[in-house]
Amino acid sequence: MKRVLLLATGDTIAHSYDPDRPGAASGAELLAALPSGAITADVVAEDVMAGPSWDMSPSTMLELARRTRSAILERGFDGVVVTHGADGLEETAYLADLLAGRAAERGAIVLTCAVRSRDEPSADGPRNLASSVTAAADEALRGAGAVVCVNDEIHAARWVSMTDATGVAAFSSAPFPPLGRLSGGRVETMIPPPPRPPAFGGDPASDVALIKTYPGIEAGLLTAAVDAGAQGIVLEGTGTGNVPVGLFSAIAELTEWGIPVVVASRCRTGRGPLGEVGPVGGLAATVGAIGARGLAPQKARYALMVALGTGGIDAVRAWFDRL
Image (cartoon, rainbow, N blue to C red):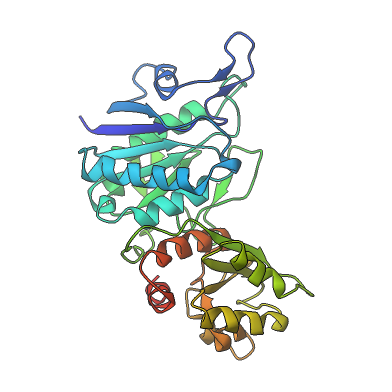
């Protein structure tokens, strides 16, 4: 029988508003509430925290990512399931994916959540948890890296995003299809997973700023973020990686200081380099900005955190070139 570690972090999947059983259930209690026969693996439950995912600190996300990796590489588990809040799920999933390393080859890393509390009619948490344990024990996900399992769909961490804050089909990989789905008690893969991220170096940086650009944005916002301690900046631009020209001097200055500035887009873009997206796109590359390689801005932030652990700005640029 496969061994699976459950790391429980509270939030909606564990919470109840029922006055007869209020508060957050532990990981063991969530497992015990599942119907007999729903779990076909040997599951060990450990509680990490109980709090809202929208307020989860980067240090807690890093702890979860490291614990998932060590559970497979050092503790011999065949897979790991993390119960999480829906709000920050895609970010923790991608950080876990970036830091998985060889663990991605040896076992499955599955994150799940719920949009309905456990005392609501048709609560989605129990099925999501049972499906996630099944997925974590399935050989089909070896090599796929971290995934999100909700509503019997499996989404690659790199592609997944939360698109509906109220419906049980809350996550999408669009424009990609889901990586797979649960059917008949096993994983059916639908497409190959995205390429594995580059190897990571030392400890990820803990302070990277994410700034949404807009017409008329003051360049001083970038330097203010660095003055406040940011070790790198991700700019959320538009189109294929456009940011206001008024930021170019600040980008060039920060680049000279060794502070990497990564440009992502609020739109879906390709994985090509920032300076090769067309004659009128990605002009920030001419002053030293680094392209996010198609990552959503919130995920580019965690990628930059990891890339900063590999060294200075040249190492960061080289890491993103392989992303």
